[in-house]
Length: 201
Image (cartoon, rainbow, N blue to C red; front, top):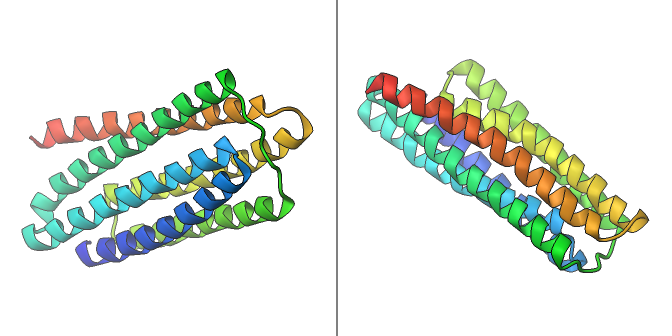
C-alpha cells in the first residue's frame, strides 16, 4: 500500500496546488467569495495530501500492521484540516453577508472553474482505481473528498452565476452553504477515525 499511497499523495498534492492557484486568481480577480472559499478548500486538500504522503512513507518503513494505525491517524488529521477550511468558509460567508461587496461575473472564468471541477472528478476516479488495487482508509477519505469537491465546485459555479442575476449577497449564502457541507463531512470522518484509533489502541 505504501508505494501506491505515496504516488496518490504526490498526484493529489500537485493537482490541488494547481487548482488552488487557479481558483485563488479567479476569486481575487472577480471578488467572488464562493470561488475564493473553493480555493481555500483546495489549499486544505493540498495540506491533507502532504499529511497523507508522510503517513504512507511511515507505512513503508513500519510495515502494514503499524501502518493501519498510522493511516487512521492521518485520516483523522486530514479530517481536522478539512473541517477548519469549512469553518473558515462559513465565517467568510457570514462576513460577506454583513459587509457585502460587488462581484464581477465572467463567463470565461466560469468555464475555467468548470474545468477545475472536472479535474476533481478525474482525481476521484484515479483514487478509486488505486484503492481497488490496495484498500486504504486514507485513500477512501481522499476519494470522498474529491467527489464532494466536484459537487462543491459545481455549486460554486452556480453561486457565481446567481450573483449576476440577483445580488452579491448570494455569494455569502453560498459560501456558508459550501463551508457547512465541508465541515459536516469532515467531522464525520474525524469521528469515524477517532473510533478506529481507540479500537486499535
